[in-house]
Amino acid sequence: MTALQHVRLGTYYVVPMASSDDFDEWRDHARRLLMADVPPDRVAWTEPGGSAGDLFSHGDRRLPVPDHDATPPRVSKRFMNIAKTVLLNSDPTRFSLLYRVLWRLQTKPRLIEDMADPDVRAMADMARAVRRDIHKMRAFVRFRVVEEEGGPNESKSEHYVAWFEPFHHILRHNAGFFTRRFANMRWSILTPRGSLHWDGETLREGPPATRADAPGGDPAEDLWRSYYASIFNPARLKVGAMLKEMPRKYWKNMPEAQLIPELIAGAQAREATMVEKGAIDMGERPETLAAIDKAIHACARCPIGELNNAAVMGEGPQDAQRFSGLMIVGEQPGDQEDLAGRPFVGPAGQLLDVHLAQVGIDRSAAYVTNTVKHFKYVQRGKRRLHQSPTAKEIDMCRWWVESERMIVQPRLVLAMGASAARGMLGRTVSITKARGAPIPLEDGSELWVTAHPSYLLRLDGAGREEQERLFRKDLAAVAARLTQLQAS
Ligand code: URA
Image (cartoon, rainbow, N blue to C red):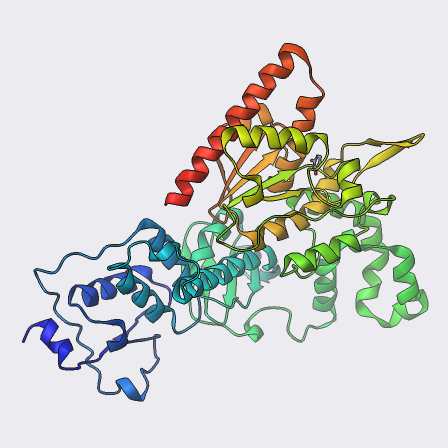
């Protein structure tokens, strides 16, 4: 009996996955099933340790032998890229969803572009949730230091331990990020899905952990104090408000309160370090653009937000069909943007529109936003004159543009000017040196930098012509790259 007949007689296959996040394993099984012409509704995929349910209780666990004459499966790079991310989702239906889409792609090769298709939409949703989880883990893992006794002739050593609860199977995927970022520390990241241990040279994987395995549960006073010191957020320090909430007379009864004078004294220095490291804790990331819009209107973390101005939110299409994958980032709203409540509508925006049109970039298909959300100005008579934001103000505000990027998930970000580049990277780069080539971002997207259109407006004569030429050249490179990315 050939594999094909096998199926016609109504055989079901059960595919017990050995790993929850091994794309190669899924791909090998899927290829085999596909080449033996096994339709998706005849296959039950199970998580490691899971069961296939009643319907498949008599399923065949030996996968069919592929038909030698079968044509090898057709798989686009785009499908493969999304599928690799989808596979990390914790939804148990992901294996079968991917196989169903793979099956359908054989007769409808452009299926993956059809965002109206429920399977394709489900894939996009799962991939988005995974990417968000990856980001969250990178942003929110907090290590606690644990002192370990050395051998008889060794001194104590420090081991950093973090507890994190990911929603999806992203631990292994994020391992490289943490080993690069904390290369010189000894650390462990414990999660309910498994653990990672790095000794400065080798990464080991370990079994799932519980919260009780990590420091910080039921702390003694000393631990409680060090915990408080580690979560103390100088960016939020408002001494007046703090004294109002917690008058001094109560301090003596609170273990952590003994730290307060010291923490206040050290706050400025710590804030500078945190800003430098991009580690300011701004609380929970907003999950929607509407939430960001609301939050930036209430934001007065830096003096700019206290001027007579209104926050300007980014804008762009919200649906995958109209969004080109491009996010354009400027410095801050100007006078006209502040009045209109929209980015890039004044002179800089008009110049930008001219150049975008010349290189064939459709602005209405891009998400356009700013690094700093409020207009910074000095009043001169009736006029409000633009002031550049300081590096510290950019670093305070970049939380919002980063949050927008996580939600919008562009494939390519164009940062115009040094402030926008700092907003995306958390460090200063030279536009002259960085322009013309992509800078990889940690989520797999690309950053391109160019000059700010306001800079062009301040020039004239040959200097202006030359800078406009370079600006257009950068935009043309972005247009070309975007087309490539859209085709992949
Ligand atoms: N300059 C910017 O950086 N952004 C705007 O929205 C307008 C001018």
